[in-house]
Length: 281
Image 1 (cartoon, helix red, strand yellow):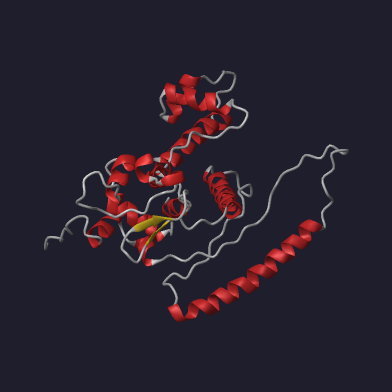
Image 2: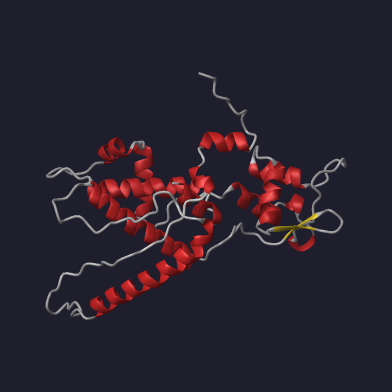
């Protein structure tokens, strides 16, 4: 889940938004793939196998019947702060323009970043919110030490809608293959899935050489497969051909230090908990 969450956070997808989408997908998959032969699927059965409440299942089903189905999204705390900065009259000036704000001030009733975050983001740390907005360049600090908002939307390290959707397709296709093979099909019915790795790793200075080798050999293989596919007869509706969508994907992975660190060690390294030393045996 780690790489997936990194992508979501870069795109500004909060846990609340992901949770809403996940609920909808759980209901959809339960309906498509976990039917009981000869029996009608009920909301109660969906709730039982998904772990959702019947109220949540009903809400997902009601949303899905709309002309344009979009799982219920929630503004992230960061988005709410930016929207508040642009719409809350206490933080806007003439013609509705957002005010430049100080982080804190001793002047009573003076609008500040701290008050903005308290009002529009609950109990989150104002400094943490401000640091993130500065990082993604939604806010800038002036020479006088005040803060000016630059945009209304929170778009952190956006990859663009096309690339984001492409990532979803790649993940879906790969996991579909893994899930198919986990079901232990009969000999020869599994989908091709192989992995080659250096058991003891390789030297860091050899990475560019390996990367160039992989790109050259894999590109040649994919072009050969593409040419083979292009030589097949195109599906025809007139002939009543049944169409399946298939292909090959090759990826080069690299595990970094952070991928291998345990959650406990990360907590200790970041000073969020005290490191527990092992007792001498």
